[in-house]
Figure 1 (spheres, one colour):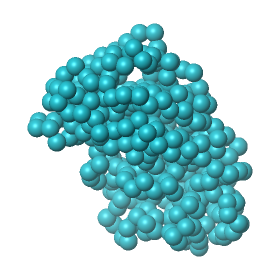
Figure 2: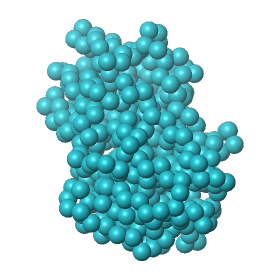
Figure 3: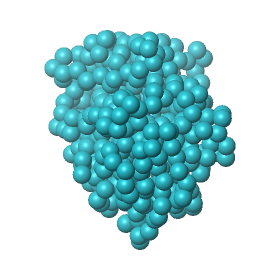
Figure 4: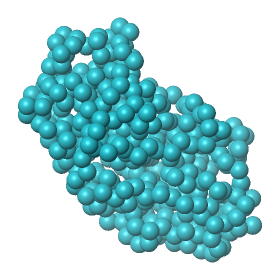
Length: 406
């Protein structure tokens, strides 16, 4: 079990929101995720500024995140880094600290929180093909923090989160040792409607870090999304265009736009949501042998990846340029979606897997028919993809894809 610092020092929490950071100061390149600091000292402000990830606001709109990099100059796949396996595989002990304020009592109960956490954990076992599990502990009581709700709500978001986590850990110290857990959640009554509040997110988590904050809500989908950040994933976004070309360089990224991915923005508790193949590979849930790295033309078969019994090759990865790869997969859980059931699920993913971008091959009709249908070709002038056949019986369906390098 990896242990982490139990105290968070005041920080400036950055919105690290996708394929290219919304406030990019490094020439438009995606920000690399920070390595969590060692566990034998408090987190420093500089480290936490990079390590803390995003607010998952339930009213998030279509945020512009950037444009795709240049077209490729070769067909050698770019690298993708797999997380520290000790962080994203194996059994993870999670502590949920229910907290309240002197003037704002908690409406949560131990049983309700545990129910949501157990459901989330069952999904993680399926997402990871049994390579990780989450074992939750929910505090038996709601701990009252030392200050009224407005004290926390009206601070900057960074200072509020710091105070909420530190005060919660201190309040519960007589009953729970936070450093004995791999993940720590603080769940508090919503601060969103307090006058002057800066705490209006649904959830907030560290990327590849131990801490998460839940502001009122506590459904399993929100938990799965936030713990996805903790495991090391950014948002699953969508590339949207206005000229009909699915790969247009004049398009923009829509944050949370991949509604089929747990790291996207389907706010319903839809059990069909799942991590995409690139994220599963990043987290070490898919071995290298499950990803066909394609550098030569030919016909390639992939099996569906969104089932706990998935086996064999479940993804094709092809170089787009020096920083981005195409990932081609086959989603079948959305049985009422003819596009996904009979077409290729195509994403663009930065080589460091900062975030993914769903390619909507029929951009004028909404995202529901985003998949590349059998018989249709998607080409950027350097790489061409054409699904040609599908078959198999659930859960072992397959899709054949022709790959060419014109």
